[in-house]
Length: 90
Image (cartoon, rainbow, N blue to C red; front, side):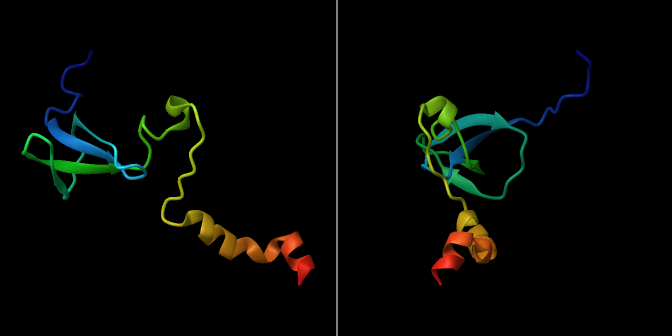
């Protein structure tokens, strides 16, 4: 491996899956302003993730509906006027 290409400022952080509140402790170089108090009583930087092994269909074996920030509703509002079935009923 080449010397000097890998970051050296790793720190312990908490990754939290926002779809099901699952959290785990790991090391990362990612910067964040948020912190969270962990089970051991220490405070660690918090990195919020949308999908983890606890919510991804590949690992869970089942499809799970995750609507982040109402994206599906925004899409339906924006493009709902083009829905043929809905327009025919009116």
